[in-house]
Image 1 (tube, one colour):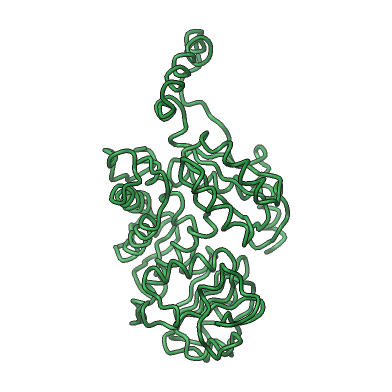
Image 2 (cartoon, one colour):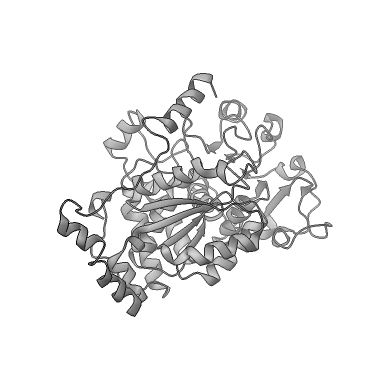
Length: 420
């Protein structure tokens, strides 16, 4: 990252005024009568309606289109545990993306504790203010306990985006890459370098979609997670199986897929050369991937590579998922975001990449052409079809699985946030 870009980033966050989001009025407040309706005495009427029926809050307040982005700052991006306040720019960024891509009002909340019980109790007490809860940048293994209990105790959808958003976008891109390479999920040999929250969620979802445990090797800081290895946590145990592999080098021999959710430059060209013909590499460490794409392509001309960066093709970016998943969940007032809704998002996302790319997307990406293939396995974030297609699929899945409290929205299909 250049000095100029660093300064540009600081200026972006500080000018013309600090931060990236603000609160704006959604109704008139120009006359004395407006003020009488907005506050005293008029506000008493919705207060009484909500006291009689709490669900009336969806009719008379912002609740139904409001998501909280909540963190304790224990796993900020790839920067680590820098504290709750340091996570605020990231949480504001998520709020910006919710509004920009799905028309969802969002506010960031930073909870200053590393104790899971304190964090859980804090969120439970404020959850009903919102239509949904997006958890972010919470370290493993605490994040699993936190999310699971909040799902059980909150009356609105709770979604840890580091886990499920990453998994959904990764799965969509992976299924398309396998298809292009003439392979399938059921027989692919997959190596996952990393065993944190994102890695575990990605592998869980791939297994739900058809990947076999015996074909999936997960590697943590101590090496391959194999059956019988001492000190394997209950979260990692489901990925252990009988294997003689003990290192990344062992596991990569003849592997079809490498998924990196670990750190920079951990996949060497020598190791890449040992993978099976037509390999797939998802090097998702940010800002520096597990292998530089240029080096990877120079080593293997037959590969498909994806990263988390916007300056390379095939960006695996959570913005392709979470705004539209929440849009669909909010629109049918879903009580949870369940596995069926996640799978629906995967299928809708991967299908968009196979459609002709609109001229507006080509213009935004400064490209002359783009079509489904090794350099385009997943849609671009600026593709307006993400909002309509993914939101509709998620909403329908919520209805089909009985977790929706409203019927299919009359305004679907959505083509832009202006329709919301």
